[in-house]
Length: 289
Image (cartoon, rainbow, N blue to C red; front, side, top):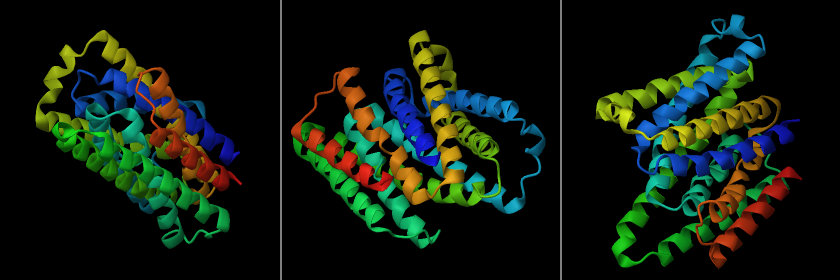
């Protein structure tokens, strides 16, 4: 069941990046993150109500609550860096770098959570790493000198996004251990909402909400909905399975996202993109095995 939920999380996550890319074209990335989070919070609360867990919202003990709050903060930071990166760079380049968090997550699951380092998990992680480096190398080599600064900027932002995403997975696994996954998602989303809107208020970009077009609002809403569905599936899988297995399967969304970026966003595939996607697919398949 955990593998099926992780695959569904990957499918919804792949739509998140594509829809967000369209939605934030002329919108400040931090404001876009704040708007999307409202949708995610609404979906998370609806799931808490549907599953009849509202009575347990205030019965979460202190330790899990602390880890869920920390997980929410690292998610917020990961989002900020990720959506800024896809705003200035190609989705097909940014997403694979961001998903390098899978390797960091596997390493942390061995060290922090003491999960077993099996042959397939280690092999899959190594192959996914190679595929990611192929894509990063391609991004650096292909850009011309006049775009060098921009390239380095979004690669750096995507790497930071990956780092905080890895921390999110470990903190969430600890926090979700004795808590219903829907309640955990709702608590984390509240933290992210406060974090995202705090940045928007500090920057003063909240004034630009009225300038967001109907098209951007629509795609931000759809992106937030996709994120909500992805999270609900992912944290459901995380509560049932091991981080070192669930997280890499979820990150298969990188391949789906790249395919969608070629079809919908008309981004051009290259040999390096294709080779990287194949390696990541093989690595993910080993982890499922």
